[in-house]
Length: 217
Image 1 (spheres, one colour):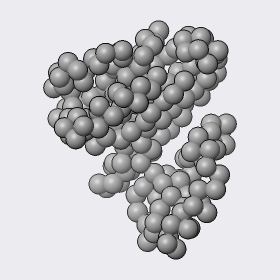
Image 2 (image 1 turned 30 degrees about the vertical axis):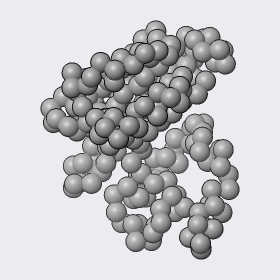
Image 3 (image 1 turned 180 degrees about the vertical axis):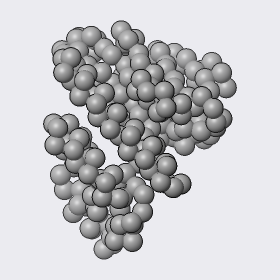
């Protein structure tokens, strides 16, 4: 099974640049988009329902042109959930969970849930940081609950936090900025401590060395 995840910063802008054609040509089993900034009614049929895929969208319920996530899948899920189930956290279109039975994809013998999330940015004052942290907490509860029910959990998206210093060009200058605060980074530590795997870190254990070479170049 092949999954692509991409923060497109506007699906309509992405389409105009021809990047959506690239996604379709890649022919992933599932592709997940964040920050779509569009209501499904604003999308052309070829973008809303491209050949070979079924699509699902969670969009902002109030502010137009803001936030939003989408999932395109070659195999229809048996269930889809929109939002975390908390009204105060689910108005911005940030969460989709697709549940698949065992064997839905040929190399997935276990039932699993695929989650696409555009986590909040904590900038804009204490209220937004609090919103982000509450979203984090509810998200972790959600995936742990799914795991207890016997689902393998795959989640992707934009976490809106740099986990370690190697994830930033200037970590010292950003030590007090939202997106790199200790309390935000600690949440990612907790997720990993509970058994979830950072796939990029797993597949690129020498990423720190790569970045050091780039900085010296």
